[in-house]
Amino acid sequence: MVSFSHLPDLRLPAALLITALLGACQATPQLTLSSAPAYSPEWCAAAKSLAPNSGSNLFATGRCHELGIAGFPKEENVYLFYYTQGARWGSLQAAEALARLGQPVPDADLQAEARDRADQRRADAAMAAAIRGNVNPPGPPRPSPLPMTPTVRIPNTTFQPTPSMTIPTQSTQQQGRTTTQSRRECVNGVCKTVTTTCVNGSCTTTSQ
Image 1 (cartoon, rainbow, N blue to C red):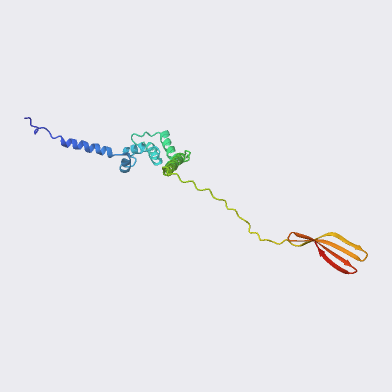
Image 2 (image 1 turned 120 degrees about the horizontal axis):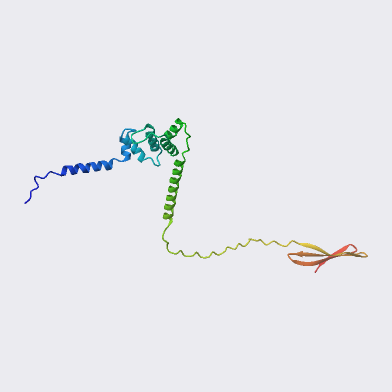
């Protein structure tokens, strides 16, 4: 039977190796940037890895080049590039650095474009959510409403009697001392002829 009692204990090195790997995984650029001394080589490397789309980290990277930190050559065109990009992403420090170096300060166009894209994405997401919320399975068919009977209004008329009219049909005729006068009277649509005859001042009226 082979005994392993004399072999070295390998558990301790394995534990140390696992701890080192976990520490390396946890040492993210964000953690290094917040824990390492500012403008140290580790801090500058972390800032550079986070520089894209970040005005403050672009400025920090440019400053590391301007200071000539180890691993960051002190080249004017390089740190001016980082300052310019930082200003376009809205970094006030980068804009101040460009002004200090006598360089033109650009507008924060990249920051505005990124904000517009974010707003558009939110609007698209809200519209998609609204569309999904409005899509419902079709329900049972609704019965068609009965046709409405039109309402006919009958005007409330009150019978009005036809006014009486007198229509003269013959002019006055005089024969000696006899005078005859005829006229036509209509009452409620019924017409009749009224004749008045005067003889020597005595008058009689007849109707037909």
